[in-house]
Length: 239
Image 1 (tube, rainbow, N blue to C red):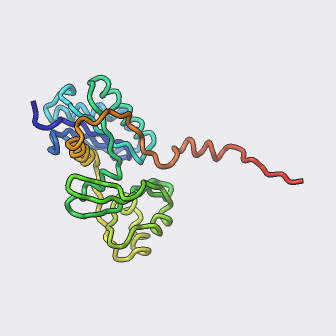
Image 2: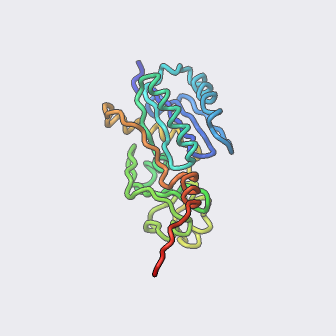
Image 3: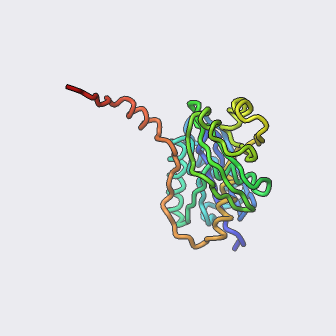
């Protein structure tokens, strides 16, 4: 029996999907791919390839980890749906890590605090700040979504470095509004980072009761937003 749990970690919250298989913090196999469409037809073949690469069978897994957002509404649903199905079939626990947390975890041991901004499209960003220690990522505020301009105007003190796909995309705005602030190149594939963070959390609470995973959307899905915009608005009458 391995000394550490064997972990399957999955991220399909953006156009770059990734799967990692780990034994504790050590990566046994990893796959990543890019698509402009749904990940639905890609995940299971990539999982099979990752299992072969790691010389593992699906029954060998001990812990399932999913990146639960923010990001693509469809991607979040696909990823969590697949992991929920596997968890029920294998009777294995499922834990979630946000994409914001996974990016922040990349800088553990390098920085004490970091601000993460992810591209939310439509000139918007998802963002959150974190305090970092070895193996630990603790939020210092709530995850939010705002326009790029509103985000740049609400950044933490200049001593806090910024990273993430949103910060990188809007780096010209960041340089204009916050000259001299450290902008760190973000990691790309997130599944291994999410798996390692989940492992360190599991070490501190291995018997934590299983909870139903919750998606982190932050803003309403596009379908709800468009439906709300299309609804007739109430008119005020006087007289």
